[in-house]
Image 1 (spheres, rainbow, N blue to C red):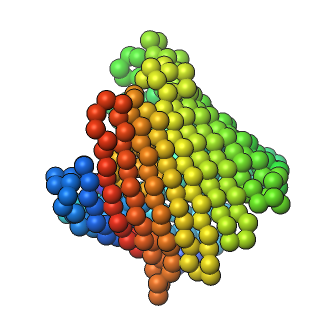
Image 2: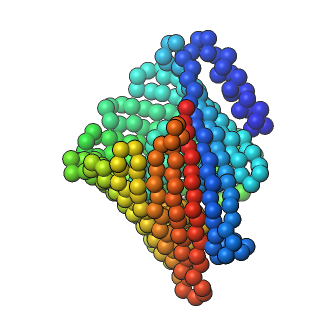
Image 3: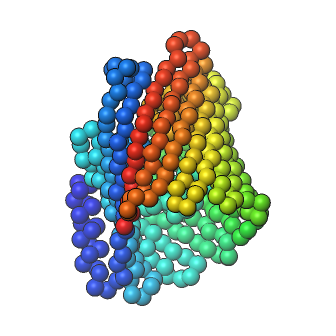
Length: 365
């Protein structure tokens, strides 16, 4: 069914090319790695695999399409994706939506939506599916710098009546060169779920300070998300995020922090992920070092600093990832060569060591 829908969307877009401005873009990503360590069958015997960490598999093809009607007041977008992993190809219809702009301050999106930029903008970057999911989305711009979004979606396949609709609402206000403020809320079928139990309210907000760019601090941001509000017998959980980015001449530094379940309601303990990434660019070559630390976080097999600390929240289990890398263009594609050491440190038990040497390739069109 997904393949049929994807082909139908593509056919509709192509047949509309006679009356619209139709553009295509996309890209291909793949890579190889040599991995060895505790997580594999023989810790002393390296394994060679096709792997690109950004795609969570061996290879990915993205094909994006967009068209605008000659009137300039309507159009559409789609994204098709093919992932290859473990010998299996998977075709996904990632996005397929139409838009109509009846007036300057109102734009309506219908279909499988793309998010429309309503995230909180820091480490969590939570949008609560304002402008996302599948449904109808209203974007209102009542004044310069302010965008308001209202999205209606129905995730209940058994009952499509109006009182099962999920409502997502949010806004983003940007004062150029000063700050960006965002907030959103998801009201999830509170009164009429088919299970008879109320679904939660989720809320998030974020603040990004933009006034320090002259000092090289391109972003200094924080965000927070509260989930599972209003459910009997379930305590809300609160997550916090923070990000700082610095760029001056050839030097770039990013620091990110994420704290999950700060009130210890869901897991009875708090988990923290800290990520530092510094790089130096010479002409077209960028050399960098990324370090990640996870407190009460299970280690993974990803050699990169942030994703390597992204295992399950696990009490008394810490993770350290060290990831030097070099990125450069090579006759078309961008190439990243790196090494990652992922060290799991349980309080009770042996240290877990996983290593990988990898080469990732990406090219856009």
